[in-house]
Image (cartoon, rainbow, N blue to C red; front, side):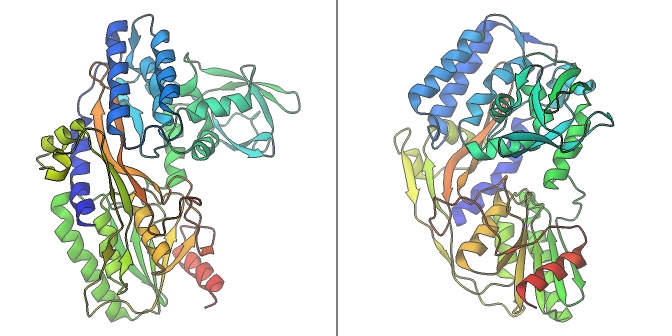
Length: 461
């Protein structure tokens, strides 16, 4: 996994530098400029993404880009163009993929006005119901059936919203319901502050929008990623359990040595505290540097374990990006023909002896916020049977997926583009069930003592 660790050290600063440039929100771009951006996006997806034709074949993708091209008949702001190209990103089936703009570059109405539909959905059979209301409007009631919005059947709206997010088809549909009001407003061709909602009982409700901040707060609650995480790795002893909260692996490269020392100090402290159980909570961890997950594993695991296999696509664009980071690509990669896909079998990690390694029962806590390299850590544990996985099944992240992130900007609109140049395949090699299913299912809670008791009870302790 050395290659993985080295490359991941480079991702964070590269993304930050890439996202530094932007255009004013009121700037319009000519049809020629927009078509240049569209052609560049198509070229990048086809030649740099490791498997762009996962869901659509090339002919279908060509048709999608042709359809977008025909819609460009007049000058547009970057926000309007972003709406046009979002589906091209969705069809990559890449849960890391993004097409985005800095907030300051968005249309003013999205930044400052109450234009977002204030509810999420859930589906029971063929019926869509309000799952959560994000406003104080009394007419909106959680659990009520929703038939249509602005005279459009809600089923077709959910499918449309799914093309404004990312991931596998089922994953996109799940996001479309959980983030419905947010994605609906992005998927609408015009900006509006009021929506006509028809319910299953025949009621017609004039729904008033909410500001973007309301939805930003809700999205953060759904994953926990924006919760206070001043201390990326922290420890406390709770009764007979050692509890490590790993809320982020997003560690700057220059701080890796210090975080390694901190983790070593934590396990030395655990040895002194002599707990019976160890809990490592990555349920709200959006990832970062996978090597941090390996550091945590080393604190309790002495078994050799298999890593991920990977498919890695060669492209001149990625070589240029690596060089811009100050990295030197390997000769095998540089000298290969454009578009060649390398397959690397999974390697085996052999932990070195250490005196303070924890020897008791270990539980890894996962949830919907377990993503990217945090998902990678959980999958190492699950597929190699290194510890017990407990918590809730993550729906945003998957054991198999795309990674090794490539980023660029569309030349004129400066829309940020992000996607993977590698496909990771879990150690078990299972390509059929692409969910990380906990060994012990428990409802997550911020009450750590209660969570520990729930897990231990189900584990038979």
